[in-house]
Amino acid sequence: TTSPHGSVKLRCVAMGKRKRCVEVTELSDGPKRVDEHSVHLGRLPPSVSSKQQVVEAVQEFGQAVHVHIEDDLSHGFVHFSTRNAAEAALRAGGVQILQHHVEIREAKPEDGEDDASKTESVLQEGEEC
Image (cartoon, rainbow, N blue to C red; front, side):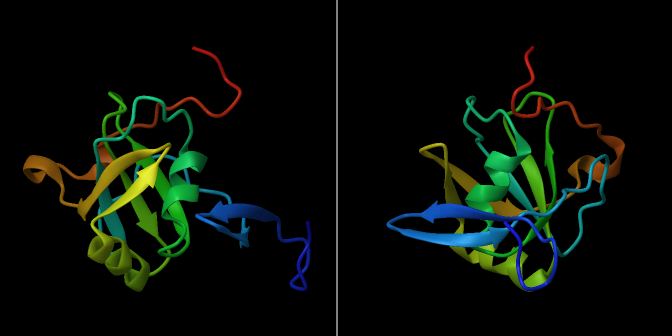
């Protein structure tokens, strides 16, 4: 689908009983430093198989521009385009992803190590192990 802004991709997403069209953006890939636009997602459900599933769950807070899921798939980070979006996610304290409650907390580098030292390893939709 295109928008009045040119060839912007839009996706219709169910938000509870409502549906809305949201802009589909390319997520940045690779390491990214934790900053004021970042939140930590704890207790990701084992059924998460793509970053897009996480983006769709957190889009109610604002535009996610980067998603990093740890190698063990149990937690990750979302980096929003604005600080206000990150703050809205923090105020909510959690979100439903694939019918599981996922905690949203302030993102902090672990033991002085920053998020940039990690690498991506999550399968994209359609890929097999």
